[in-house]
Length: 379
Image 1 (cartoon, helix red, strand yellow):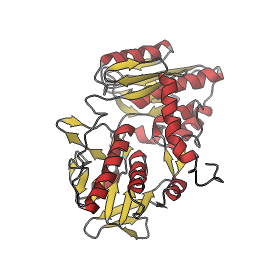
Image 2 (cartoon, helix red, strand yellow):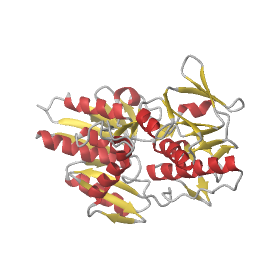
Image 3 (tube, one colour):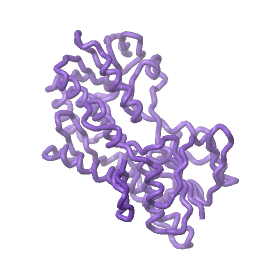
Image 4 (cartoon, helix red, strand yellow):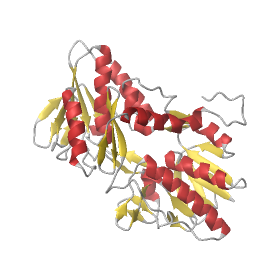
């Protein structure tokens, strides 16, 4: 039985790992355009050099080899559900499957704002974070640099915190302003107290927070806002929003506002499952969040239901925990400070240490080979 896992982020990796744990007989193929898993949540720390690319990414080929799977680095261009084939690359390469798991994640969106994509930096990918770090290094620090962070969600506040550390480490000055179109930073969090706490921490470190402020255009030297005001900049870092993966536009399968729609067993169809950020999933009025925790949990349930389908037994319903209505997350704020938001509580004591512990524990599976391979030293 051949299982193809399309996309090797947190959800896809968990599907492959769980499938192998449950069955030694399956033929598992993992496909991704990138050669390494990227720990997206830690990309802002690339800017302050707290982490290296090697520490927060993992070799997918080695991981696949460790679990007895095959990894193919390629770009998927289409899916033929009737013929049960994945079409990859420009040469018409096709990979057949018995079961398919779509875990291709999301893409950054610039909302069609003029100049935003062409003139902004990003931390949405590891390469993007490294390019942004390089752009910071190229700034003229004889003068006070103006850095605009567009988007006051989780990534935006983390980027602002790490930028402060970057300039503090160099003894340089910069004007950092964080732009959010909603009335407060972290608008996705239902409790205002976490927004107020984070805003105060950043403001105390000199970050100017511009709420209820929307970008109209990113020009060569200044950002124009919808109220007609302008702000000069030396660097723009875009952290505002994601959109469905562009591959989904080609697929004639159920969707919700462009995101894949799955049933309560995470099935898009009888032999096609979906997990992670590519998925819009709702259960009893509660919507699953697009985060690492949900991606991993969905990965485990999808793998279990593939095995159950093969065996002809009842499937397991997926019930979200880290939801849109009740999210939970770690937020780094720079200066080795962090916030843990859990069940409406804002926890700060040891939050950064706990966040790093979770990160290191996860990446260990990529950096340490199995006990059976005593000669392997990781990457």
